Amino acid sequence: MKDNDRRDGWTKRPEVCVALTGVDKWFGAVQVLHDINLEVRKGEKVVVCGPSGSGKSTMIRCINHLEKHQKGRIVVNGTELTDHNRDIDRVRRDVGMVFQNFNLYPHLTVLENCTLAPRWVKGVARKDAEALALGYLERVRIPDKAHFYPSQLSGGQQQRAAIARSLCMNPKIMLFDEPTSALDPELVREVLDTMVQLARDGMTMVCVTHEMGFARQVADRVIFMDAGRIVETAAPEEFFGNPRESRTRTFLKQILH
Image (cartoon, rainbow, N blue to C red; front, side):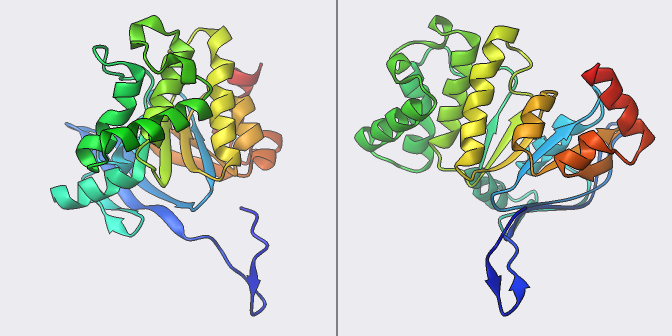
């Protein structure tokens, strides 16, 4: 992270928004996360990559308790994730998530999808929620689709609607779980452009993706995972130009050539 704010001769570092310490997770007898240690600071953009089954999606799903970790600590904006519903709800109010398959309600219009959570979770009045939603639909460049149903949209438009829906809760952190993997290649760019703009606006982001061009353009750090472990973490120029670990080099050779 670049931060030129200096105080008493010291560089002020942005606050830690997400901290995973010694996190382990099992699915039955199979351990899928091994001693995960990760900090994400306010405004930081972290891209997580790795082969299929490496634990990437499981790790970020643990950040908002869509998956429950069995060992270690996860703290999000000062709240530790426990089994208490109060803590889980507090974290989820601060964390937006965009999935591979959009997860829009098919029987609701785009506008209704976007206003549902602000109205029922935060108690925002309908008129205010609609104004908020229309602002975010403008931001993701589909304001003309507000009264369409998801089935009437392309995959790229549906994913941008899903991003707008998450933004309507005014999250402090956005998690993206392979947001372009279900899209046809010609639709990927429009979703990535939306994510690039979010990054430029200063949103704290953790993104699981195989889009290495996006990682080069946006990431402050790239994390490589394999077999449930963080193998390497580095700035993009170092990660792509001079990876330290042989497993990282093998992975990059496979996906870049």
